[in-house]
Length: 150
View (cartoon, one colour):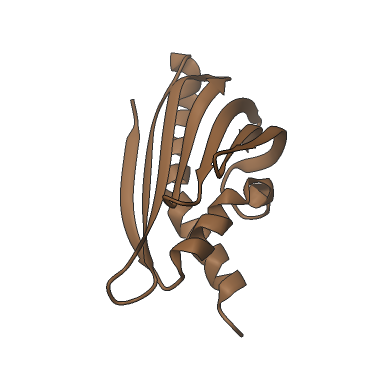
């Protein structure tokens, strides 16, 4: 039952960071272990966008694809990811982007997951744990590249 949570100040606005994390189709370009991401469906209702997405992750010879439901709530600056299908017993992931008092924003990231298979958990668990710990850093690096003028 690995779990990770972090709160990172960044020099970018909450809207910029929300947009960056919400742009899930670009994840394979910069996110650790993410080899592919395909949007299966997209619906908008009450100002929120609901995506169903398949993400393929890999490390060495191991590849796994899992399906999640991604709720993009711009008004509250929250992104919630719920597990649908794949190698996990469960996966719960949340992002929140709040104005920081000195400017920029604070990115709150939380993930909790467990693999269905103990063998897969043993093979991939430590790598997933390291990758999830690097996620917020990968997004921050991407934001600096996109939003900081050269």
